[in-house]
Image (cartoon, rainbow, N blue to C red):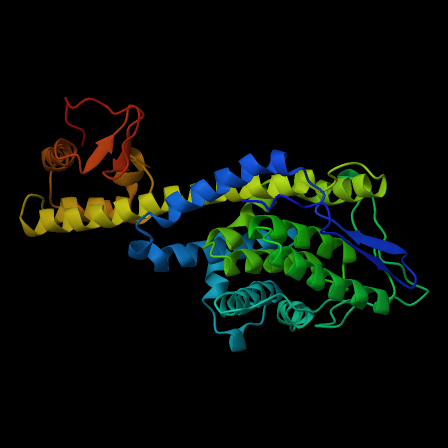
Length: 398
């Protein structure tokens, strides 16, 4: 719930060269309240699900997916599968730059998770610098200066954004102004926390203002998203804080545009200038949590299915050939057309010395037992997924 009085939780900072910088909540509480409650309701349902049964698998999937998401937003070229493979490498043996970028983000995630579990942890400028140092480590880039606050010489101006996403923005250029604003951001966040502003509100606001300060030469987006995730994790939200990166990637144009939309609204003195970004974040959290909930249910169903087919084999209700077919479907987690199955080397080897009648009987029996489903498009589904267009049992398929 939001505290009743929000109007006084703002901070104006006078800088040497950038001019005044104002931190404000910038939203209408009544308009945010419903969205906030929907996220909290989704989270309560999620944590009540059988997470412990699939925690390790879910953790691995979320990390790989979110590293892929946040890295791709910043121009990373690894696919999601390549990202997962990179995360399994020994950091000391990595030579490719893209793999290094992925492992650096994972190192920042590890720090984030560690501090979020520390009792009494609070956001500090040192934590922000440490994140940047990890994210930028050993990445060749003209502006790669790990942990170093940006301080532009007079001959160089930093701009953020582009015309396609609301225009270009000139953030603070002078190092001392940037340091002062970072310190103010951390202090303002402490005020919000003390006033009882929920992390679901504090996290996107810190993310928004951090990106406006743009304190480092490179890597600001990656750092900003990890800061946001850390604040959410420290408040007890699991998995979703990192998984949120995929929502930002999926909606990348809206994500980039909102930074400018909110900044320009504040400059014009419009009411509730940050409402759009906070609302975008809350909807992203709701969708992300619901997606994770669905994934947990699916993983649990897969575990039960794996146990069921093993028991069926042990009880001799299915044979080794049928068990192999089901395991192949399980490993893929998706339907395979009958043509795909028939042409697969593993399937061919099962029936080298068997006739078409045996193949047909094996498959028909699996369908009778509902350990596999065949749809009207002749796609074979693992038994833990029920397709909408199940093909009626009748003529046996080979």
